[in-house]
Length: 371
Image (cartoon, rainbow, N blue to C red; front, side, top):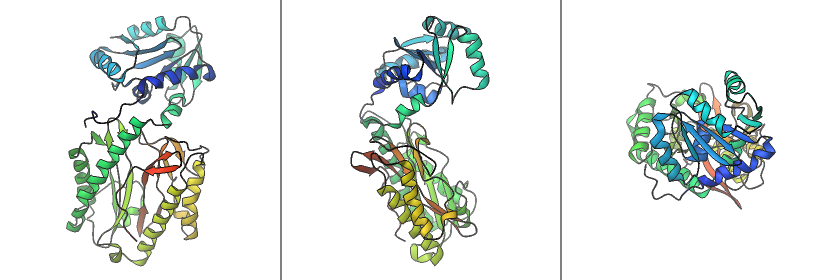
């Protein structure tokens, strides 16, 4: 997927914002080891590396496989960072030690460093420093998307929209779930996606009662409700959308399934209407659950209402009954209520939306079947 037509992202500003947060985090330097966070801060997409962030700037450390790639990606992102190539772990450790020789408090990403990793850092890398556990230091920054990030997510959504429209006529031919999933994946790639966001879910008929059903050899039949949950990947950024399709039209499904579709569609609309700046994430979840509870299906809504979307398909902020976040402009979240009835099937309807100054704007646009 070419990104030449997409607006630039403010990658250099991300490192500056993390450096400004070091004091409040209680550290003088931070070692970023989670590869997605390294990509966010530098543009580097290699499979091995770490990033040191301190008051003097950034130091990207990787191995010889990525010497040219790292230099090129730092330059393309506009990030001014030191680059250390260590062909052995000892060489990498020496580069980091030299860079932070005077640092007394070194932050680690607590969510991404194993117990054994922490022990190695304490005993071998930073024996003379105090290690500080940080939580979600980079993820907090990632939650607010800039215009370039939103544009990439929206492009991925547009590719997914068009791919779904292209493959829906195949339902009339009675494909298997697996065949429809493959066709959708191929169509997204054909239309410019770098990859799929996650393993596409196609769940038809009674299989729809399992929210994460893996497509199998069941043939899709007239009168089925078919849950299709999928996304495209563009320049590292994901899309996420679910549509539930009544095969043969709403008139071809029975009354209970048609009511399921109607209730979940209304619940999803209520949730989207609740998304806006300064809104509590749990209130979005509650708006969806009220509609489903009023229909008598509260126990059939078995998952959270949504999640953030970006470089990861699931990231902050969470949208659930137990989340305590507050929405802000630039947050990109999903709203995806569902009802799942064993033996009958399920319905899920999902859009990805970006929070704006006065509400939200849907990024996914595929039509929703009219119940």
